[in-house]
Image (cartoon, each protein chain N blue to C red):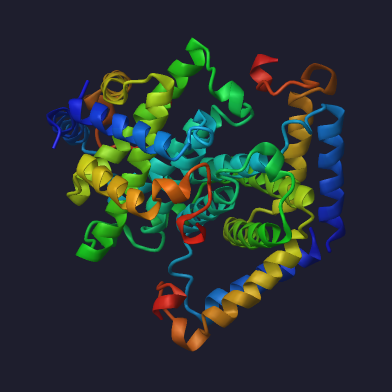
Length: 116
Length: 116
Length: 116
Length: 116
């Protein structure tokens, strides 16, 4: 478990308590918020080509950074409510993906593992 | 910067390199993936009431954990591509939110800061 | 096929042609736009309770109406590009759902058909 | 108002009544469902290039058609609950967009109207 993440989750807990926002922060509402904010990240790329998306200027990069931050804040709050350790869950998922997509079979392919 | 996060980002970079997947991992595609996976988190709460969402059973909690992991993995890859330090960006955003939503004005309200 | 829908799709085609926007309107970009706009619909309900969402005031109803319109406009453009007749596809899907969710088994349950 | 759309909305109302699903179909839940299904449309394009998305094979086209149908079904139900006439709202929005994006200023540009 990362100390930095635990500290940020504790700060988010205090933030919500001081504003009496826990009533709004059901896991359901946090999941909706996560999805809404992820859509706002995508909005910055809506009309860019793939190449343009690889070459954001500083202003775009900063704007995307703020939206990524919003996604991460909701992800940490949702994880906290559900008692899920997000980095551990991510590490476990990466191991599952490595088994689903062996390098020699998946190389250069974007097919789903069920179709490899 | 969190060492755990840096290590996970390095592991994701190796994972993509070994599979020659960098061609698919434009920031634009990673942003779309982030949004798709956030939708899959939300799907688990689609028909639950708020109260039910606060009382997931172990099986539901585990399933949601896998989807949260997917969101975090894409968030870390997108941040890595864009040179954004996600925890730092999240801390900065929390400070911005604290200024936008002073505790005494925002208490118990779900209004947007522009309407407080 | 609905004449009203065909006319709106034709108007959208002219709109894009007059602005030379066809270059941006790949099915992939239209699908991303559909998802972004659907997120903006959801944003209006983000912190409402279920009951509050059933009792929008006129201003809220109008704001949601604009976002629903955006979703429908992208849906019609995407359908047009792909040669899909959206009302026909929706009717077919409703018939499929009726078979998946027989009224006597699905009554009062929000379970997925695979779990009924 | 399109008779085809009214008929489909009436069929959806009957479908929900026969299953006693109205309790689940709050505008909030329908908006979440709209967003979830729009994400499933996007998922079909997740790793495709723009060009590939313009050349779906028949199987892909059919799969996307089913997801578009799901989006439309939720959009019609949400509109019905809120008393919004979706085609009229879409026509109004197109007129607003035409004013925001005059052809001579917007030609060949994907900039937002506030930046034109």
